[in-house]
Image 1 (spheres, rainbow, N blue to C red):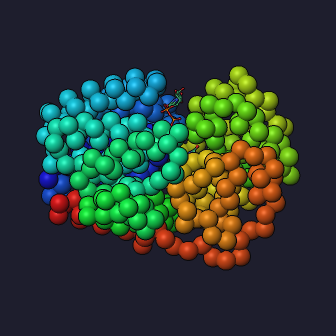
Image 2: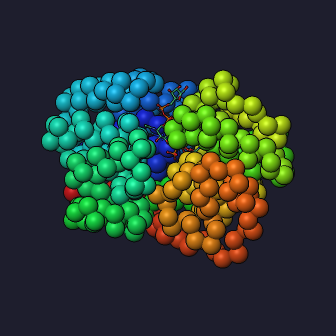
Length: 351
Ligand code: UD1
Ligand code: UDP
């Protein structure tokens, strides 16, 4: 069987790594990897291929940045050509980026079966480009892998229960796999120059970066935190910070780091503040309290017992969340058994 996998953005390299590793070990499956080029800086792309042992992409479309239409349109044209050449049995897409929806549309129009990993996530906020991308992708796919029961329920409500498989979360597989590697040689993954006590922050979502007032509010809240904040900065945010935000003295901006370094930074942090989808879950998997700099989350399983606190960009709510006691109740595992990728691969083979 031949699978064409489409990836393009940082979180997709991480999600694809686990399943690609298994796929390449299986003689019955050939995987053709397509990188759209949505993310292209070394520390947003190449570092993940190198450190997670993801094979070189068979195709790199080199699409780069642009408006939603420019970016998605260029990907559609490129992916269609590849699908016509490769004639796969299944096209596989991950998550909710422009690369996801482009891969989905190109496959669906060619009547190639489409599988969606991380299906059924909903913020119920259509102002988010990601919400549009995932609704469309789920609607036109033939097999939907829901990471959580909530996601499966969302799909059932949309009439898609018949093609949904509750798979667990490949990001949970990944944290279990790489956590063991980090613990076996922690010094190797230590970011240089990081203090013993710090909060870890990431910010990149449009709702924060495209509204300088929101970003300014977040930085104001960070400036009131007692202690250092380490902020590996997404290139999108770097641009805005350069032009319109005053950087507080306690915020230490660093370049984006690789996945293993990021996991080590998370493991050692006092708390995590983020608008990232992936990092909210990783904080939860690693037993760190997360403050979510958005007005809602798709990962509602993380909200119990203040493991994850929703603040948006409100400085008062952020301050209160930073001061909230750490949870005493354990995190509940609602993300599978760490073998989601095995399950997904078996389902694809049996499709
Ligand atoms: C994209 C996804 C978002 C995901 C995020 C993961 C969409 C609509 N959004 O957002 O869901 O959470 O990836 O990180 O698909 N840039 C660089 N170098 C790079 C990549 C981006 O400089 O390697 C800059 C460019 O100025 C670009 C901006 O970042 O315009 C935004 O990049 P883009 O891929 O359009 O969206 P993200 O914000 O990364
Ligand atoms: N990440 C990383 N280096 C960084 C920042 C994040 O490896 O400097 C990882 C993070 O650990 C998580 C993934 O990138 O696995 C999340 O990607 P991102 O926040 O860009 O996108 P989202 O998950 O919000 O779509």
